[in-house]
Image (cartoon, rainbow, N blue to C red; front, side, top):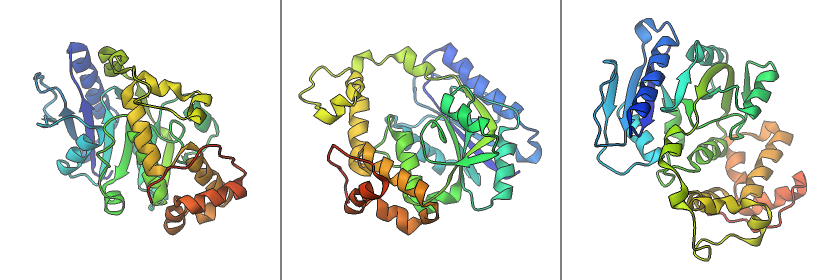
Length: 303
């Protein structure tokens, strides 16, 4: 097995979260016969006020700066050395053989660099598992990828640079996927690699009601977005800000849909010069004719 570094992000606010951290760590070490290739494990703690003791094989890092999902993953990259890096939430449980399944696909396809395990309780991932394929390539969030656990070869960052730290929580997963697609890097869902996501345990404890948008004139939505039912963006101002940031960087929903549909029709064009070109606004509008995807809202994109 190749050397793996596992970065786990945690905000430990009570003993229940601490026990969840321990469960993730214990399941990781129990998931494989690691031998001499035992993973390097770095837990990055956001709560500077707590001190818990972990397995001696785990290193704990408490950054002296404000939490940001991508910011802390970048810190993790700087403080680990494995050839492969698993980026993980603390609310997952690793299943037996999850890592060896990824390594098996990698051995068969050496050019693959980015992998996602599955959680069979997620309906769209269950659909992919049901196809009976060992892996699927795709860039659809929650079907081919989930931010709670993904594994990238470290060398991929030589191509894409570091994680974009302006995405501090929401939409970070979408930015990760769009970045891979922009650089024509396959995102590989490995159906034999499974983890269980316990789903937003800390988020539910903290609660999001305090972030609800009350001044909707300050945080407006277009008529198009309201008709599409996207008023959920007002439930949490962090949702709203992340959505606008994502739209400014990658274009709106329809723009990204056109890119995906175009490449589904012409998969041989899924190469770096072409994918970068497709995110150009003028080229993308032309795709509406080729893919027959209508767009009733303006495209917002920074060229």
